[in-house]
Image (cartoon, rainbow, N blue to C red; front, side):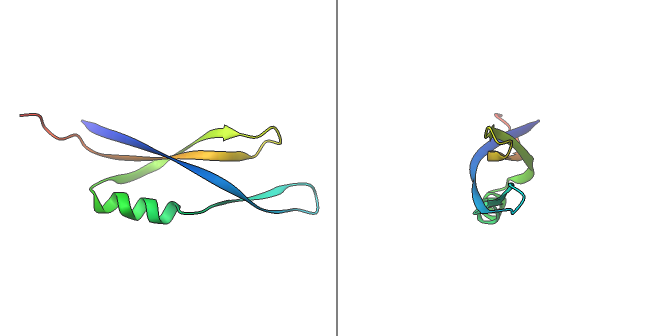
Length: 72
């Protein structure tokens, strides 16, 4: 059986386009993934959790999994 952990990560606006769009950047995700890996977690993916009215995603959750410890 697998155990899952979810880590919220806010995305930053990283500039604007001449055509009206915005640039979105994730910052700190590499450090979070490396830190979790050292503790036995594997990166499984991400889910968007907040979206602005303009359509861009402002927050995601990084998803990690590992083997669930036996309770024997």
